[in-house]
Amino acid sequence: VAAFGSFRFVIKGSLAGAAVYVAYDQGLLGSGTQGAEALRKAQAALPPAIQEWTSYIGWEVRTVQMSTLPPTPKFDISPSDSWNKGVQTVMSALSVAPTRACEYTVEGWKYVKDLVK
Image (cartoon, rainbow, N blue to C red; front, side, top):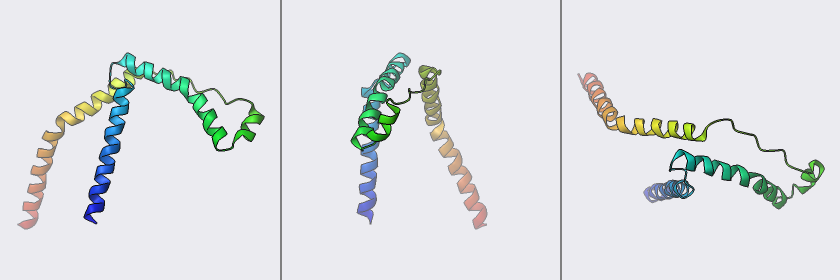
């Protein structure tokens, strides 16, 4: 049972590492302009990928009646602002994590001491 838990940990860690590598490789961890460029690439690649996927699983009959896929929605948000806000929020949370952990530990010890009395 312990081996299964460590195996799950290794798998999850590998997937997380791969996700970070792909994000870095695609330029998502760079500047806001690199993130915006990656979003434009994804928006350009999405319709052909959906078309290929639907033909692969046999939904061509349905798409033939429609003749084309509906257009992808247009995003009127600034990817760089959204990305930067997310990064700032995560980094802020990580920077206060040790302090919060100490505070919660002190509160926990006080609670346990009150229970023991």
